[in-house]
Image (cartoon, rainbow, N blue to C red; front, side, top):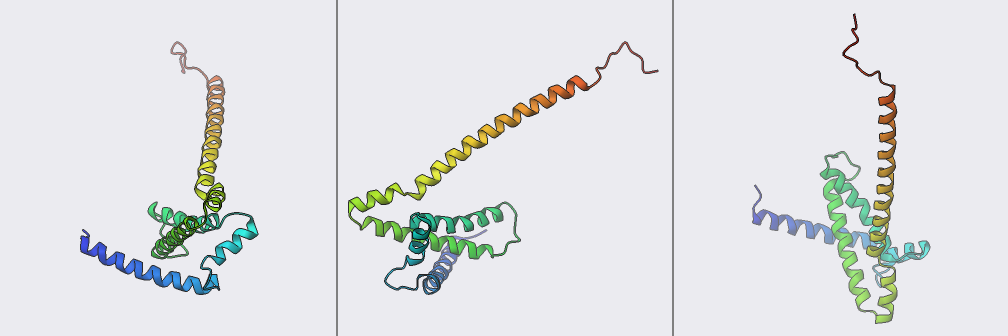
Length: 164
């Protein structure tokens, strides 16, 4: 059993590790003390998407790894605690992006909202669900056809006919 004190200690360790990880990442990726989001913005410009979408893409790699771990897959290229720390750092960076967006004039915020990664993900999920439902319906139809066909090919048992 884990105590509240244990959790508090683990949280302190996690946040200290995340702070160190973020600082190391800034040196490795941002290359510009004046723009902590330079890496995300460079990739965003290259791909024609928002920096938030770039961050979300990087974050999802870790979320999927965490989901795999939760589902029993322990053999991964990256340690699960590293994935958790990376996801915390990405959440902190997203928090910083949101704060930065809120400090911009309203007109800029509205144009940024048009590129909202959450809205895009929601739209993609809805489309995926529709596709899945269509595929499921098609699979059910094919299964019914198969079962009907198999039933017509199977000899029917007649109790009046003796096998001897």
